[in-house]
Length: 75
Image (cartoon, rainbow, N blue to C red):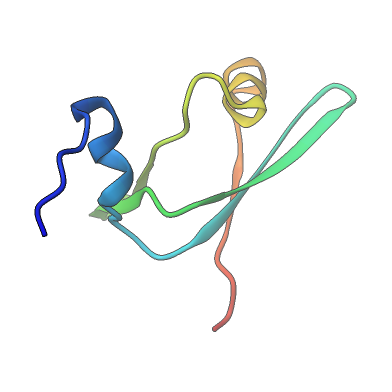
């Protein structure tokens, strides 16, 4: 059965990477977020692309501190 989906909601149906944890911190605020929107961009140097909505606390903490850690769970 075909179902119409609003274009602004369609991106929720596409998943591009394994689940990772991204931790961030700035001053007295700490946060960790689970992300599936990630992709290796380069092996040398190692570069990983991630996507976090601007409305998430993690996005604001990363913007302020200019750093974050990527944690890859062991399956």
